[in-house]
Length: 212
Image (cartoon, helix red, strand yellow):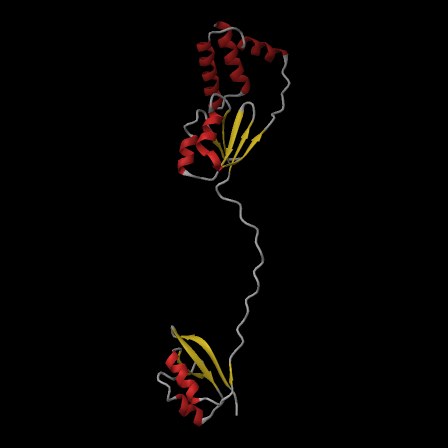
């Protein structure tokens, strides 16, 4: 006696049990006794609803028939993947003069950074830049807190200065009232923010300190 192959399938949106065997009038008449049994032209086999009642009826009608079920495919073992880095990483780089802030795009965080005076976005390095003075660094630490994953200290190389620059610096460092020095400092930051050239900034500061 030939074997009967059975397997679970999806047919026209419903779960069915596919029944396949060689042409046999007696078996066909037995299958027809199962409620809902139908011949499928596309499957080239009989199928019955996948219900406990229909399965039990099938077992009663074919108690001695050799039945073969397909071996289920075992999916390949997934390769272990390295955990992705948190998308909320915030890295702060600090030098004596500047602060650079790398952070994911977030409306609330961007609004905070913009409250820091002279902060600006650098599209080339994909980070925020600002001057390291007053309490800027403390404000950043307080706002981001434990979200800061790394704080890196950067030593900027010292640039050689010529005699003219040394003279200008000494003029800027001369004795002035604290209020005046603060106003000069604010004016200097404003020019830096407006992207005046370094030489232009120094010339303006030198002229101010000379006539004060």
